[in-house]
Image (cartoon, rainbow, N blue to C red; front, side):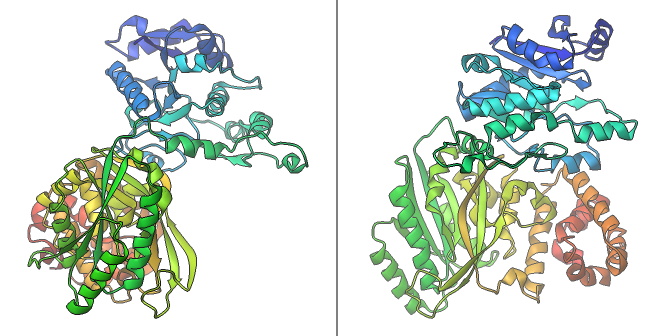
Length: 589
């Protein structure tokens, strides 16, 4: 596999300086181009004969194992997009792990991935300071750069747009993290120039895409509105850019046989919701690709009325006899709440170690189109997608599977799934599809004493056994009917369970140093943001003055998003693991 590394610099002296900074590299590794920044990328596309080239600007410091990284990135891109279906893989360099950097890494528009991600994100925008080009595919598609008054950064953007137009994916991979020397701006004129640097490509964008605005790492590019496509008898041949990105994001180079176990937790109380859920499973099964096989495990726990429950179970099995339904009556467990025990015992019943598990509650439902994206499932990753809340009203007719009224509510956009570290539950249970082997490790390694917060606790713990692949599609609906235990005014039971889960996570050593630094930065940012009584309470809490402050501050601070995990993680860092050896009881003391 032929590859070359090129740095842009203007003089031989700068090239020599770069070689000095990369002690241990063979001198032939670095080439330089002195034709000017705007000629840098066109020169590479036209003159370099290698199949692959890593290009970077002069402020980038490459790691010693860069060639191993390049090999790995090429292999990952081939697996995810297809060998002949990608053109650029990039990433933004980091200066250091400061609070500012961590905040930047969380910026959705930058699309930089946490360390626990295995997949490349399809890029809506890309930074030109370090990019890996698949010149072989670019040449095959005969891609050239349109002429505009441009710089290297604009050239990089144009190459991204032309790639998607020619059905080539552009990705961002966390393997390509590099160190960038800090670039300081000395005056306001440079900032003004920065804000308007993309205006030269608005005509190009208007001619090629229907979109009105485009994300960048700084200002968005706003394209003047045109109504030309509204003219009669005139076909608009422009593309929807973000539709093209999404199409590539949900494409996979491989589709193999996959068994999916849908585990439904239920107390056999809600005929209507169960009928709605099974209706959507029936439709999904009928329209699913042939490589998908479904099993439904009905995890029946804590049944209030056994006689009514048996009648409902029989009715479901008769009505949905085309669905493979396996009822599992959950045995009581003195160490676990019924909700957790239902998951554990259902998982233990699955014998195919290569299958997958989709956890849903009986008032959730699934979208049939979801199975069109299940080719992205892999036995070594966590598949994370979006879910959508529906505010619903239901009639007293328990046999109906449709609400009388509904309104679309909050979208759980799980792209920021790593905020689970802060205790934000923005990844509902139905948003994740797990390899069964990963869930087996979670339940074998942890007791999971608590209740109600088990959904995102399991997801958080699972990330130590498998990285995440986030897919920007909505796969499930969640019913909200005005009441919810998690949102009750009296949150005593939920808070106790939540703290119990978090204590177990901290006690197990699952937290690492980077997580602590991240949470401490978040805590410091919260202190700066809030005022008055909340600020005083937060300072007392993190200075170790517990006592009544803990009990008093939890409901007050939660309004500001400062949740228990941040507090416990910081206290753990300050006082050590022994501080939590007795779990929640020691915290409450």
